[in-house]
Length: 313
Length: 263
Image (tube, rainbow over all chains, first blue to last red; front, side, top):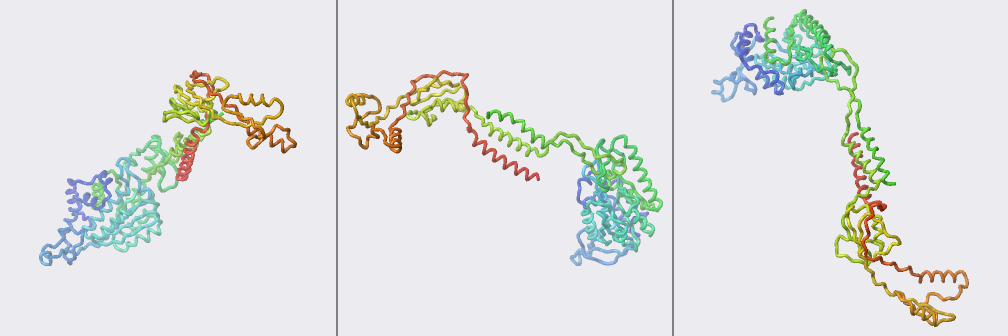
């Protein structure tokens, strides 16, 4: 199996420790997902990729024409010398796992970081999912995307190759946080990949639990799919540190106004801990690993922690 | 009466009142985890600030211009001046040729246009006023008497002592010369016979009106009229009316345009 094997991952983690991981403040300044992937996976992806390329189970299958985005080291230079054309060696892989990226693009994901300007949950989720997609592409796995926004589930079918990565990145860029989650029926129709074994990465704030999304993830887990959740929070949410005296409204719950002052801080923390404690316990109960991450953390670290979680399974 | 319009200036407070935004609802910031905070009532912020400041300024200016147009203000802007009465002459290119022989009366109606220290010289046959003019500016009369045009009138003398009347008419001096005709003719305006009927009487009256001439004005002697600070100051209306009316039209169009843009 090609996807993060317990053997290859620790080596990659050790290599990446010294690598420069893109910080969240840099992520806030960049809208180019290609650049983000290149920086985040600077130490991360090579470890995984090299381990897989040289491992057992990878056998030469066929040549195909070079397309932009292919790695140069996969180009067959001897064939180039003979035919004066760029050909890429395609390998037969024994992996048949499809990777599915699920992006919660509801209005609550617009939540910005109160300490890093320009950084928000949706941008962070885009970057992490794009990196996972890039890893899947480098490993030769099929990967697809489901964007949940404005009551709809937009599905990009799973496929392999660099073009698929570009397609996925374009869909991620296009996803704008609006509206609420789709209902259970719409989600069931969108998640039609349940017949083949899949690896599902869902990035959300999981403020609604139980919700159609949580039910879909648990159902997938019950169908023996590998489901992993990334719970995104901001530092201000964790510290309950908001502007005193300001008025706030829930972007998904009408025009109700909520006030905040120091006296409410403990009540806020208690309500939040109760909610997310229940979420974590429920997901643990159904064997869905969930990583709670602050968006102010470097995305490389979060990605590493997410994959390490996977390696432990 | 016109200066009372300045008491309408407090009307300018109306646009300030209209454009103020006394209460403003506090804008609620989106917060994803707001559901963990208790609900509160929408608060209103007491803030004294103005909206559409440009439109407010234009409206204030419009009202101020309207009041000024009604108040018809006169600003002292003229300096030393030479007033030329018809019949007089001046080498000063800035001299004002007044349309009447009573330059003092013309000046009194517009005296507010002159600066307090301005001096005025009147050149030409300025008529002598019945009373000494009271003005707030020093006025020097450099009057000259124009030679009167000689007129000839024909009279018909009938009745007794004709010779003595002829001698009397012949002895009259002045710009009018009388010629005694022996018989009524075209030059003689009317006869001394009593009118026979109403139509005749009307003809006689019209002929008398025709030959009547107004008394020749007496030219005032050259003199310097002393400054009288207590003299009543008259205001000539309409000095700035045209300019203010134009400004009023422009401001009104501007105000309508800005109001339309705001909508």
